[in-house]
Amino acid sequence: MLAARPSIVPPPSPAPDDPAQDWTPLGVPWPAAARRQGEDILVGGVGLAQLAARFATPLYVLDEAEVRERCRAYRRALPQAEVAYAAKAFLCGAVAEWVEQEGLGLDVCSGGELELAVTCGFPPERIILHGNAKSPEELASAVRLGVGRIVVDSFPEIARLAVLATADRPQEVLVRVVPGISAGHHASVRTGVEEQKFGFSLDSGDAADAVARILRQPHLRLVGLHCHLGSQIPDIAPYLAAVDRLVPVMAAVRDRHGVVLEELDLGGGHAVPYRAGEPAFNVEEFGTLVTAAVARQCARHRLPVPRLTIEPGRAVIGPAGVALYRVLTVKHTPSGLTFVAVDGGMSDNPRPALYGSRYTAALVGRESEAPLAEARVVGRHCEAGDVLVPSVGLPADVRPGDLLAVPAAGAYHLSMASGYNMVGRPPLIAVRDGAARMLMRRETLDDFRRRDIGR
Ligand SMILES: Cc1ncc(COP(=O)(O)O)c(C=O)c1O
Ligand SMILES: N[C@@H](CCCC[NH3+])C(=O)O
Image 1: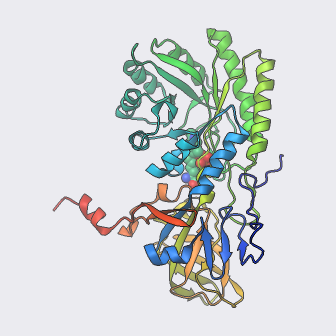
Image 2: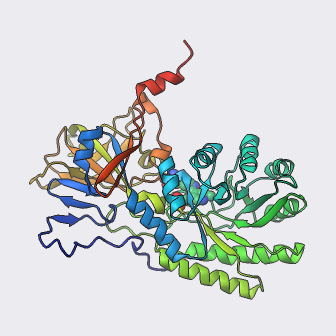
């Protein structure tokens, strides 16, 4: 197994002209430039306590420089590859703009993500559309808007696309195959194994059938194969296994149909650390090893080396986000458990409830001399399972009014946030070079009322 180290963004070093450094770098899993300064934590040069005072809580903070540097790290590690940011991790206009400016493509999986990106000026030819159940309307708008590739995921979709694509508007497609490789942090996100809803099985012959059907359509251009193994994968080995599995399939397509596929899309799934000491995905090593594996397999099968595409979501944006909450109550149980309840919860971060995901948290805005004691940070929703951080050491004097910051909150929080209990989704503030600007406003009761039109 290959060693994975947190390598995307180097740790911050003190500025040489700053001998009286009065801050401490926070390190993994915080944004690379995050630092503790006195009682506050600075992200993008802005104090979290200051942001809480200005915008109220719960609040999400996104470090623009961290997102941009992560995009750049991917491009440096894979200069020949197409890197498509997976919008499902989180998308808004500003994020679409940042990744576009950094030269990434975009992976979208709904008409909503697609239309938002295109209307924000994202070039449609750099967009890849995914989905196991794309509606006819979504397929029509993708073809009309001119998306780069559509990843075909079912037989009915081939028939629908065959009608939509025309001589004037041919459509490039990839076929999503199931490589039979198990990887990912939870069964719910392991999409590389047989017997699930995504893609065409290689073992059953469905993938070969899909390829043959697409090739019979005059206005569909089959450009390659796609697979997505799963999410929060720390190792490179599963990706190398996917290369070993898919390149022979490309050779089989060439042998059977005389068609040389030009693209191999290995999906996303690269892990990020959520707590200190957790491994991160080694992007440089991934670039080197996967590129070599593709070249080796292609030489063995006498295929030209295809363009490699990857679709990282979490690893681009996850570590750039910090969630900020206000403590509302603290309870101690007879058995010694401490529940620290905050003003957010599973409506802004459903991941602990869905997958048992583990996080850390830190006290912000107040210095405490109290020793650390184990606490459980819980949300404000009406379920016992509404836990944000199952176990973390917090100052024993943690109390109502305190601020808690949760790092690694950039991916699959706000994109999966809900209207549960009409609490409303928190705002998102971008920070950069000491300045803050709101990217998304708080969801208010008025927003709920506006949809409530039955009376
Ligand atoms: C097809 C596809 N591509 C890319 C991704 C992005 O995954 P991650 O955010 O784990 O990199 C996903 C989600 O797992 C996906 O389903
Ligand atoms: N929502 C999942 C990741 C889903 C990836 C989408 N294919 C998580 O938070 O881990």
